[in-house]
Length: 234
Image (cartoon, rainbow, N blue to C red):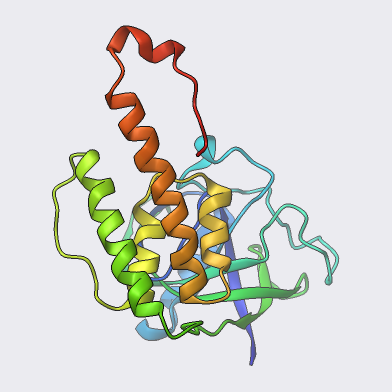
């Protein structure tokens, strides 16, 4: 069913299960946090949507004050925003005397933008959205999850990241990899938009293979040769 959701455009992609700390300083998002605090704790939801027209490296984890304003037409095609985002549930709020906030939110559910609501009466962007299902996609989703789990462990080993167990739930694993792997914004967005868990896992198998290949290639090169080494996508 369509629902109304306040939006927070960011230069990053939020996926279900990911913890999102934010420093809130702009007036419109101060208003958003204040409005959320008036709601019951389990209803303090806002939508995080990534902007397609900015460089993610310059805006990682920061507010995008100019991405999608309430002045946009009600049925805008959202040229500066991706169409699929993720709700965030506020779990912690720290307020400051000057009106700023630090919040911690956790990704919950995927949604698709349906319609902007420029007359919602708020300074922040509000939209009508529809929530997306989370189908497994195919019978061999468990097998795909096992393959991704093994390849993800190999990837983390090459990064010298402390190893811990991976989730056994294929959907949870698929979002863990989407959040933790070193991917650019558009690749992470494509994983968020995947039509099924199986589709996401298949894409991650290919992405992890590429990243492992790059790590192996660079590790095998003398340090003096690294600046001259070509970067191969496959």
